[in-house]
Length: 264
Image (cartoon, rainbow, N blue to C red; front, side, top):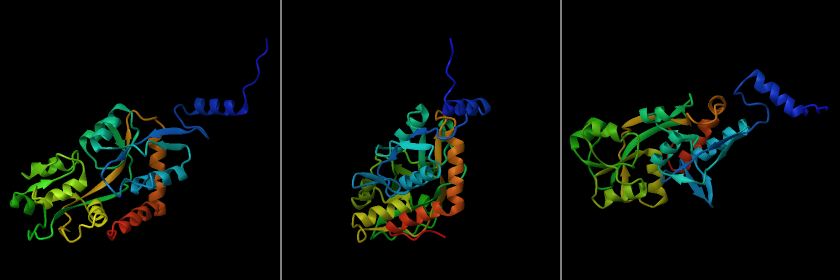
């Protein structure tokens, strides 16, 4: 009995795998599931039924640079707690633009280069005359501060003795709470605060306190149960996007749409 020779593509892939076990061979796709983060524009939003925002733009730029990386799930918007659970179980392979926490390091690995920096500020009712230059000032006022459920900075605030209401992840609701007298401030990244205030016409009712209370880098996270090829390919793509200036251009585009000047 004779056997037919392996087809050239099959032979090439076999040689690749034998030479570099676990490597991604030419033309071999790596399917990666993501989840959009709900109630956090302009990092994630829908336009005409399609995912848009900072993270969809970053993921699209990665896919253009590295066509072997194919992302799905961008229409599925969930809370950050559900995203973390997905990273833990492996149902989610990639989490986009999340702060560095001990919990996240247990279940995922950050890609080396930050995507951008989150600048955290307070929103208050327009009539509020408080002066808050730093977190020590905030703690001395002893206010009730609204935050988004599951936010990584909640424990940081509580450790300073600041009372926090994190009962909802709906950030427009959190913003409106301060107008209704439930909580004095809303602690959130300035990009989302600007977006919500402008998009919902709240400029006369809500103001942003001038001080930036904290700055934190945001990373792309790769589940420890993701395909092993994902992390090195994503790391290389993010480095190229940073070196080319494309990451900065994507961030500047969305800060402009939010009515916020990009920080220097």
